[in-house]
Image 1 (cartoon, rainbow, N blue to C red):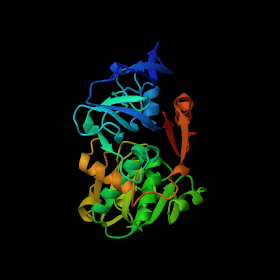
Image 2: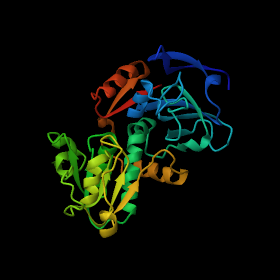
Image 3: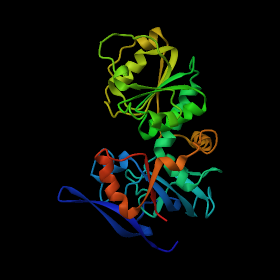
Image 4: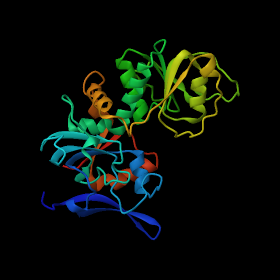
Amino acid sequence: MDNKKFKALEIKEVDNDYKRNIIEKEINELPEGDLLIRVKYSSLNYKDALSAIGNKGVTKEYPHTPGIDAAGEVVEDKSNNFQKGDKVIVTGYDLGMNTAGGFGEYIRIPSDWAVKLPENLTLKESMIYGTAGFTGALSVHKLLSAGIPGKNILVTGPSGGVGSFACSFLAREDYNVTAATGKTDAKEYFQNLGVKEVISRSEVNDDSGRMLLKEKWDGVIDTVGGNMLATAIKSTKYSGAITCCGNVASADLPINVYPFILRGVSLLGIDSVQVNRELREDIWHKLASDWKPDHLDEISTEITLDELSDYIDKMLAGDSKGRVVVNLN
């Protein structure tokens, strides 16, 4: 392909500070890879916001273009896995972390990172889901595959992207979802997700030091980690299961072995980055069919590349609501 110019958000380190600018780049500046994609939509995630302020745990070298999610059309594929014009989704792997990401109009990646857009899903809808929706779906899939003993499921961090989607998917599978949240006044929001009961997160944040707690939950989807996860594990019924995908509360887990050896409880780790292609495709087809919410557009805000920097600041300040979709058309 010709060395075409395109727009991208670039984060550049200047005197120990990190500046954001919309710049013009060239195709030959992109990293090596056999698949070139014209990005139509991306989405803003907290990991992108961290990359934008120089978090070296996310991005090691600058200048850099974040964007861990991207959806668009194939321009060129040297691997012959895709045809020119195919619509594809890219989430996970190294996209947007140390590989130029979806906040640019073009990306070049290994073809194994991409999956074809399923039927009944638009490129924009795939980015309303993004990594958050994919992780929520993966959590539900793994929890239900564990063969939990009943229908009562606890979701922690239910107002976040992963938790919100998990609540919705569980409700579509006819599970009784309890949302543990600090936003107990947002009952209508949770009811619209299909949540049966909303409780204060203080109710699942036990500090008694007891080794085991009263059995309440057949399964748990935890997105926060720390003591809330420990409390959930201690409160899960015999042969129940808990998924773990976040650490916003803490990366430490203050727990003993008794829930595992006396109740047979399973703790299931969720990683959405290195998921194999077969499972990745299965999850995306589920998101395009059985688990697709009726009003997916209503939980997102669409912005342009020029508006992105302001929304990064909003996310870092905790003022961002719902999913933020970046239109690069």
